[in-house]
Amino acid sequence: MSNIFLVGFMGCGKSTIGRKLATAGGYNFVDLDQRVCELAGATIPEIFATQGEEAFRVWERKALEEVAQRDNVVVATGGGAPCCGDNMDFILAHGKAVYLKMSATALQQRLLHARAVRPKIVGKSPEELLAYIEELLAQREPFYSRANVVVNCNDVSPGVVVGRLKYLTRRIKN
Image 1 (cartoon, one colour):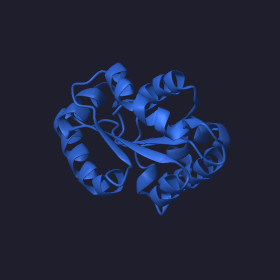
Image 2: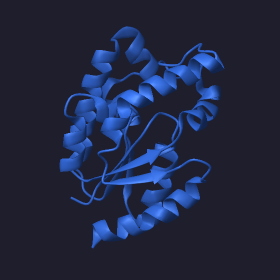
Image 3: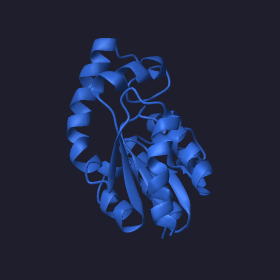
Image 4: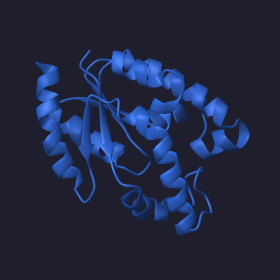
């Protein structure tokens, strides 16, 4: 299969870069979180509030299994998707994984405006947000770093990242 799975912490640009990469490489694009919402018939905050994170992760795996059956797709995974169960093994078995790597400080700056809508960071002060990111990123790094390709996204525009990834898309398609 010639699928590309973008992995990385929330706010690193998986959806933005994924859309651009799909367009540039002639792929279809799937936002895994959006697909979860479609399958569950609820928003992510609603799933967390009414069903809990464990149920969200079950929906997420169902969505991951569904999109992995497609071909020629760029998938923006949720930040925690590669870190649950054997999801990273599953991703690596069904395509190429690309880790969009950012520092905790850069992620904090991107996520400050999203504290009202992202269930895991609602109401956190800037200091609490940074501490949360540092701790969770340290836990998730061993999963993310298993990706086939690691791209440093600190201080780099999505267009530049996509340019760097065009070579990857050509190699996968050929």
